[in-house]
Image: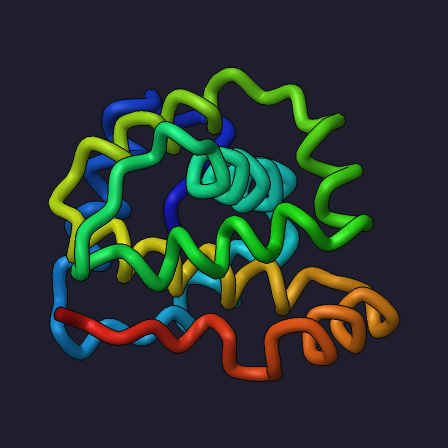
Length: 142
């Protein structure tokens, strides 16, 4: 398991890039390992904030993750969390990941969305399910 608190930013980004660079990548293993990590929760929010930014660049390979990121950013409880997240280290990891291959960004998004879903309260999960369905983390690979 990656220690997000005590690992350098570039090493964290390399780790995620390596892990998601797999056509058969399943987010459950990493998301479950990081379920109690405050840094991973912050990374979820930093990534969604980045995806929802009007300047985030997409093409067919990561278009769906950007669409879901923009939708997530409109969900009130997520918007509140995004507005209050203050973790420059995880913001830098998100920025580095946004420069990675767009297919890897899409796969990384599936990990982020899955982890977000795992760490939400029951009420928040119901809200997400009503808004996006219960499998919104499953993104196509192009």
